[in-house]
Image (tube, rainbow, N blue to C red):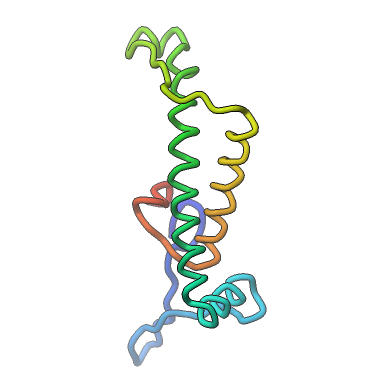
Length: 122
C-alpha cells in the first residue's frame, strides 16, 4: 500500500503460488492494458512522453515555486533567498501542471509504480 492507494496487488491462494491480478477489461485500467497489447509501439511512446512530461512539469514548477517560498522571512533567515533562473508565463505553468496531472493519471492506468517518480507512496 502507498499513501494514495495500492502499489501492487497479487492473489495468494492458500495452496499455490501468488499471481498478479489483472484489471477488469471494462475498467479504464483494462482498456489501457488492451491498448498497450494492441499497439505496443504507440503505448511505449505514450509512456515515455508521460514520464518526460511528469518530470519536466513537476521539476520546472518546483524550481519556480522555490523562489517565493524562499522569500518568507523565517525561511530567508535560515537558508537565504533563492532566485529562480526560470520564469515561465502563467499559461505555460498551468499547461505543465495539467500535463503532469495527465501523465500521473496515465501512469496510474498502466498500474505502474516507481519509487523515484511516485515517491509520495513510501
